[in-house]
Every structure is written in C-alpha cells, then in structure tokens.
Length: 580
Image (cartoon, rainbow, N blue to C red; front, side, top):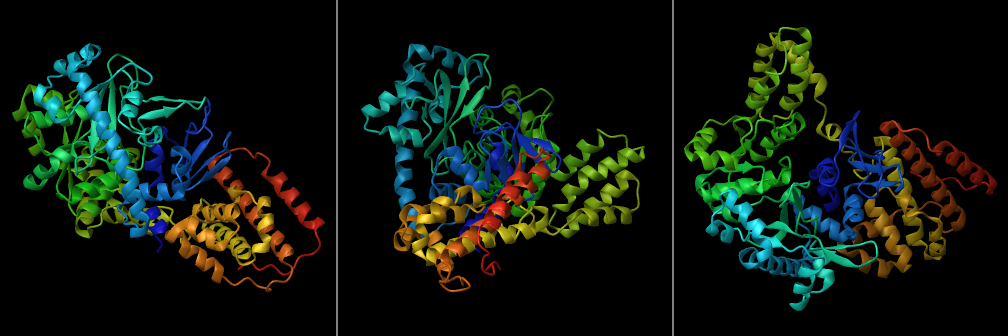
C-alpha cells in the first residue's frame, strides 16, 4: 500500500472539510456553501462513501482530501501530503521529511515571537485593559496568565507584521504560519486584531497556532489560526504540553471543549485536562492521547454529543483499546464554572462518568416513546450503527442484549437488524481498491486505468509532449495522477519529472514507464486521441453520477457527451483500443 493510500484510509474527508464549512445532510451525502467562493445557495457536495467532494457552482471542480487541502490552503501536493500524514500518524520517507523539518522550524520561531509580543501587550499595554478585565472576570490568576502565555492582539492592520519584520522574519513565513492574511489587492495584513490571544502548543511545547477570543458581543466568539504545515485543529489538543506528564501519572485524560475550560482546570489543579477546541473529538486526537493513557473521560455539557459525533467516537474505542467514558455537567454549566464554584463537585462528576455506549443508550431512550413500535424501531435505528462499531464481540453482545431488553423485542430480531446494517469495512467507509475517486467501484477502476493509459503513453513517448495542452488537468480524478501530469507538462522530460515529484511519486512514475502500451510506437497521435477520448468520456460519466448522487439537475453533461462522440466520429477510425 502506498503512503497516499494509507493516509486516505486513516483520514475522513468529512472531518477535514467540516473544519472549513458547515456541512448538512443531503441524503447519503453532505452539502454546504462552497468554501472557495461566495454563494447564497449551497453548491458544494461531499460524498462520504467515496471520500470525495465536488463544487457544482463557480468552481465546477472536485477531488479528494488532498486536492481540497491544496486548493483551500494554497499548498503544493507534497506540503498537503506532509500535513495530512502528520494528522493521520503516517510516517513519511526520510527524504521527504527533511525539507519539511527545516521549513517548519521557521514557522515555530515566528509563532513563538508572536506569542511573546501578544503576551507583553496583555501585561503592559493600555489598549489591553479590556482583555485584562475579561480574564479577571473569569477568575484567571496572574500566574495562570503567565503559565499559558495569554496575550492581546492590537487593533491595527500591520502592528504584528511590522514587529516581526523588525525581528528579521520574512512576510512569506508570516503568511505560511497563518499570522497574516493576503487581501484581494495582493497586500497582507494581520489576521488577529483586538482579541485575547491564546497560544496553542504541541506536546513538545512549540507554538503551532493561536486561538483568539473577541472582547465584545460579535460572532463568532472564537477564531483560530488556519490549517498550516504545523497546525491542524482536528489533530491538536489544547493544553497537551502542560497535561502530558499528568495524564501519564494519573493514567487518565479529561477532554473538555474549550480553551478556558482547560485554563481553569489547570488553575484548580486538574492538570490532566486538554481540549478538542470546540470540535467533535477526532481519530487523530484519540491517537495522540493513546500514547499517554488509554483512559479517556469526555466532559460534555448537557446539550453536546450529537449522535453522529458519538457514533464516530464510539468507533475510536477500537483504536484506544478501552472504553471511553462520559461525564455530563449540570445543564447550563461549563466546566470552568463548575470548577470555580465547587472543585469537589467537579471531581465527583468525573468519578461518576459512565461508559460512552451507556450514555448513548440513556440519551436516546429518554427522547423516545418505547411503548410504541415506532419508538422501538427508532431506538434500534439510532443505536445499531453505534453497536456495529464495537470491535470486542463480548461487549457488542452485551449491548445487543441491552438493546433487545430496552426495546422489549426478541434478541434474534436485533441480530437480524444488525446483520442487515453491517457491511464490510471497505464498503461502510466507501473505500475502494483504487481509493482515488468519487465514482462507483467499476467506474473508479475504469477511470484510473484511462488516466494511467494516457500518462504511460506520453511518458514513454516524449514526442507527444506538445499535445499535453489539449488535456485538462480536471480530467484526472486521482490527485497523484494529476500531479504527475502537471509536472510532466511543465518539464517535458522524464528525468526532470522525477526530480520534481520526488521519491514518493517517483515510484508511480517508474510503474507508468513500465506499463505495457499495446501496439508499440505506431500511430502515436491516434493512440493519444483515443486515450484522451476515453478519459474525457469517463470523466463526464463520473460527473453525471455525482450529480445524480447530489440530486442536482443536469447542467449539460448529456450534450457534452454528444459533442465528444461527434468529434470522435469526425476522426478516422482508430486502432483497437488499448484499454484494460
């Protein structure tokens, strides 16, 4: 399995895209306002089963998780690969990691300098008076402010930018660290202005990003650094640098939702608390905690833990190798409020935590009328997906018996319902052997073959390079194939291509060079035209399939297919196609 495929198996595209735009259910798929352009009606779709996305609006493009991160963050493929590999916990070959380490050191340094600047302003600047008043009102002590290096960002467009420039940092480094924003006119300015600044550190204590809280009634209350080469909100835990040793010592991690919850927890002596920063806990975060302890308590307020989030979290128990527990706070209370009012009550709530699955049972059953057939059916519909994720067959049997007893039905009926629900893991998560596209399995294989046929043909016959301008990069559903195509189009030379794509994609290039192209070197132009025709046809068919999945109206796909067929007929009869 390639590194790219391994990353795709461990990364959920829904979690990644959900950090950039609010996703809503649309049948089996999800929809949202496109994160790449302004719009009033959602044209952006995510396909969880295929792990792909597509914008039917102004972008009129799509792809996989790699292409999304590249487009959203302005990263190269290798940069996106590093970022997602870090999140997935996948080790990259050493040759790829060395340049990243050197680049990342600059980002750590500029973030640390920014944290020092913000902290100094909070302590001494008159303009930071409101921030100091806010912290005082939340009961945050001076020592805690220093321990967490809390700060304040001034209400100026280039205050931080000028400060960092004076200390030798290049504007490009500030932009890559997410400290600056590039405006439409090409100029850059400070991202954070007039906010309480909260440095976010990795387990080694390096500043990887910032959380920022407004000091008025504007929304959203909190904003974060964008995703960068060193900061991934979905893979980071706030306070992990200060909590790691305590988590090991106490053999328990308490995961809360917000920055202030962690800050108050540590001030009150609860030093094994970390925060998922307002997002549902992710697989990457569970993996980070697992290295320290296999015992996790989620501390949720009374309105948290939506069923889909709990479903995913239940699946993480298999990774953890242990039950995840849930401590539910009194309605309307945040963790820091409970701790400030009565720390002993907080400890009692943690000790009274219940297994996650039991919490889900209680929460679901209390919202249904189990005296009716409809209520019993709804209970099974909501809970069976959770139980299907349990890897331990004994624990699964225990909860299936609990479900049968609670619904008042025969155990065999529950087993039959579970059997209908459970599918092979690859089908359940939409993974295919190709793993690269958002199309049905058969179409995936055909499309991948068409892409590789064209690439193999041009790589093995450089005289076809002048015709690469006829090929749209959008025809390549696979990000890997698209990157190879773009690099070869730019270089026109196999040796330079290998240097451009590096060792990770170089192996794929070698495979393409060894790929058998039927018919030798005869009729190269006709072969090129046939390969391009087949690729365009599969691309349009795939686009039509995605439109059908999204429930969208046809936007001319049929007409484009007819035009393609007409162009095909105008050419002389082609050789026997070399598709496989």
